[in-house]
Length: 381
Image 1 (cartoon, rainbow, N blue to C red):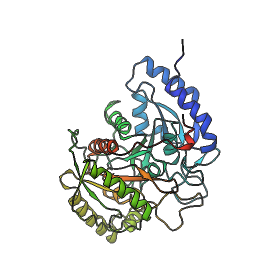
Image 2: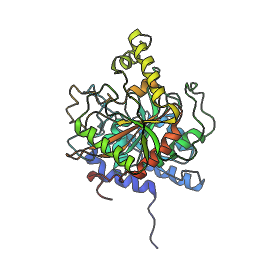
Image 3: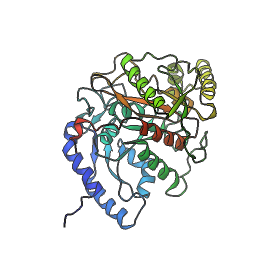
Image 4: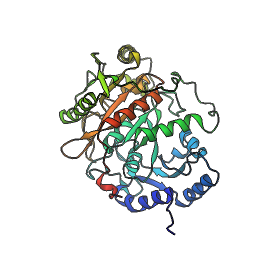
């Protein structure tokens, strides 16, 4: 009789085999993970021993991780985040070196949820928790060719006192991310006194309309976007239109550049007059853009993955951090590749609290796009 290898054992085997080159993890917990898996199976918990990774050394204490463990998820290790010696966040430092992009080792995977994206892209974990204060889930998701979700600000507890950072997840698909969110929201009993959510969750979604009403912008009105990145995303949107998955609305997605406002809020000056003005204008424009349940589509990043020496003068966050300020849920899903083999992400933004609706819509978009391949660094297995 052939003995079936458990999901956790397979994940640990892949970590042992692949991580020496990728440096996605800072810690791995093999014995504890196998013990947790046995317990989850014996108790017939809903997730049944699903292997997942947590972001950084403190990730195991996060609200999402505790909910997943209560539902039978198994944390296999802590993933890399930006290490010492660099001020940018689109980078990672694993236990034995800098984290490599699984598509091109000479490029960064993005960050700050760097190792989380690499672990999911290469099958070292089925899910990974993340947090997103300026794009820290969506950017690495885009650059590693996986799905990444930033939840509505305040939907889940966050230690970030500025209110910019929200819990998130990286997964191989929107369907897997939806499974994560449902268990985090519903399992394990009531939350341990989180702050009240400023944007309460919307009711559970009904059938996804077809075609989905969407607004598309390649620059949100202010960003300088790599022409090839914009072309890849536009081609994906055109494919969605041709497939009858989306219907483009004639609405002007001209937002104000949020860089100054985001910096003021992060620096503890949310009442700065210029920041208040930018936030107010963008909130009004986003309300009009998303009216009637429409989605906003854009590239997830203005640039392709940069080298390990840093992004230079580019703001990789240019297209993501507006939604940390506004609080909207936003996701990145694989859109295609540039000519030099770098993944590109399609950002999808939904109304406040419509996280489950966003995930249902993302599933419909994924169904109409080519399946994302597994990167070369995954070893093909």
